[in-house]
Image (cartoon, rainbow, N blue to C red; front, side, top):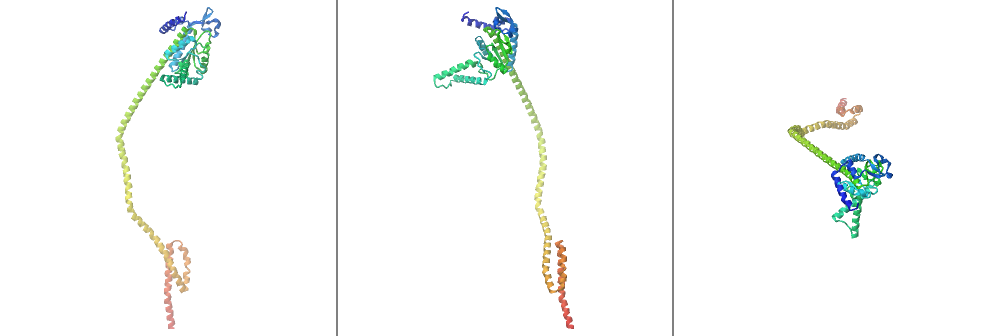
Length: 410
């Protein structure tokens, strides 16, 4: 078969596969999924998937392939339907075209060139290169490339081409994928190792020379035939498309439920506001009455406060009278204190005139302890003593006159 015949046959086969898309033994047999590797290159762990041996080559049991493929499709559809992403990996020459075409049809992420080490385990560094690719593509699209010479612009164009070769299928990948679809796990050992290290489930096509225990969902089949890879990859792409449709439907239903809930909340809020407005309208007359009733005691209190303020000047004369009455006893006490003080010099003069009065004046110290009790009581004895002193003094001249008359008569 020449190379010119190959492009003519491939489109016809793909069209038939796309129109039929059957998942049965016949379609798998026509695609050559049952052909395995030579028996000397087989892996004993694949014994359960081998139907027999023909022409020193193993034949894969297609019934188990159908069952495994259905299980894998259901799993991928479930993961993608929950909002996950499936990364399709096939870097061997037979798988590059099929991976790219079917991934582009359903909008899935893919890698069909060399798997760079650390593509998932060192995703931060890979993401920086992806951002660089997006930046350069935008710069070339908007014609804003800053280059001093033509050689520099050519270098930037070559950089964009190189980055697009490795990261063209994952430019929109912002996080790690939730499931990995691999063609030929023996060739993609690094991808399988990184996925297992990160705990990402793996769906893979395993041939008779592979170890099916390294993946979570093994699809036994021929991984060296373009038709076989294309058929299985298309079924995986269909599951991805169904999962995205289910995710979109679930998202729309969720948005509709949220919108309905918001509408119900808005209606309930409006009803509550209307009821509150009605209650407020009914409560306004009562509130006015209560305000008027509450204003009356306040007004009465204010008037009561004003009346005492007006009656205070009338009470001032009474206060003055009480002050005058309180001043009288104090004035009487002061006068009583002054009178004894005036009487004492007179008593001294009378005592110097007649010695007989000394005996009477000597009684004063006995009255002094009594004077300490109260000033009013002390003033009365002093006044009485002063009067007593004045009477003997008046009687002495009379006695002298009588004595003179007696001497004259003799």
